[in-house]
Image (cartoon, rainbow, N blue to C red; front, side, top):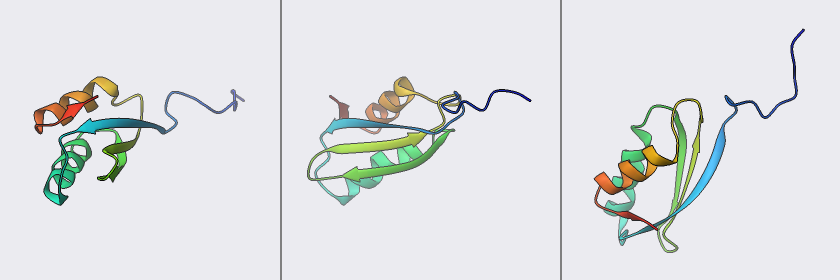
Length: 79
């Protein structure tokens, strides 16, 4: 049968990051595009006023280090 416990590694997860340097819609789009181009990212939501980025992702394919690198490569800082 197999275990149906839930919470497996392939289950989507969500992380919230604080990002500095985003000040306009262009900044928001740059960060969103950088993250969405990563394999395994399912959704990105950004609150520009608060500098908050929420990423829904598959932890088997991608993780926090890739998010930080993509954001920094786009010219912004993860706090």
